Length: 126
Image (cartoon, rainbow, N blue to C red):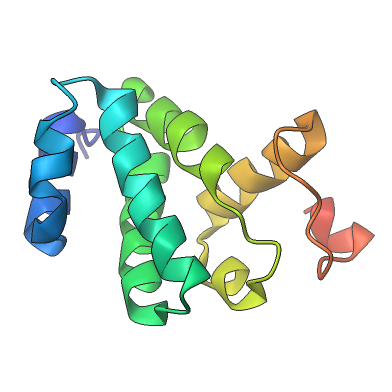
């Protein structure tokens, strides 16, 4: 299977969330800024309890984290995962796929994300 890349990501993102088209296009083709627009959108859904939008966004994030090319996977980890605040949303943690969970736990380990109060020490070592 060929690794997923930026153009596929943007097409899927704009088809799934057409309301992001203008904000993504305004990032002048800079992948990390485009992914950050996506992160802000998903974070807004999490903060407002919009579980369906969050679920769809996190599914897209998981797909490009796990099956994206190196550039795409890195952008998801750096400009998406690091910007998610799941402190008060254990339901959102449960929606993360294994690649996003692993990336989030790495962010906690290096100090770029706060430990989640609802995860046990054993959960954090997985």
